[in-house]
Length: 284
Image (cartoon, rainbow, N blue to C red; front, top):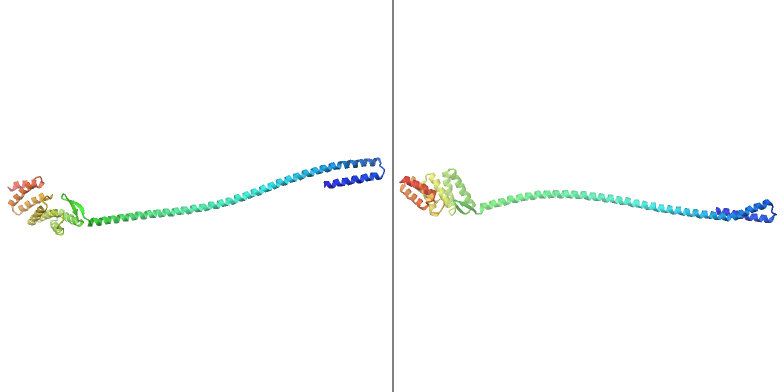
């Protein structure tokens, strides 16, 4: 637009100059011509000013456009960053959900394993109890089968479990003062176990049962069998004293005195020897 104005001004100046040359100049005409000439001289300056203003406007527009482009780029970058942050946030949420799911699954697995562990603990305890019961049963069975060390009347030896059981049962009967049953039980024991280490003790208690049942001759035979088999037995002094008692009951006082003398000589430190001395004093 400024260029058009400059062109029109230049064209008017040219026309005015031509008209002035064609007719004589009047004072008014000369004044008008001078004004036109001044305008023509000032027109380039106005053109330069307009051109300067156009460059400034152009630079301002360029700067605004650059700023707009920079802001647009920054906005686009911010939008991209926001979108990326949103996507990352969504991905993070998905990851957190997956992690929570894994944690829940692990909790369930831990609970399942804890339950299995508790069940295994119970199973192990039950198995151990069963093993203890089996071991106890085996030990009891072995105890009933295998010989065991026993101590009877100061003598220690190995005895068969059945042998020990039968001897203890017969002795228990004697201690209940059931002398007929005790006599039968000890007689059966000696018959069943003729080589038993219990035999001397069994003979002693059998003789006592017979004495209580007034079977004095039978008692004499078993007490003498004890002395013959085991003269150093702990019950030997009592067996000798019991022989003397049987002889007294059979009215064999002479034989009783000899037996009591033998007792005092053979076992002088025994309690039976003390009783023998007292009886000897009464028999004389």
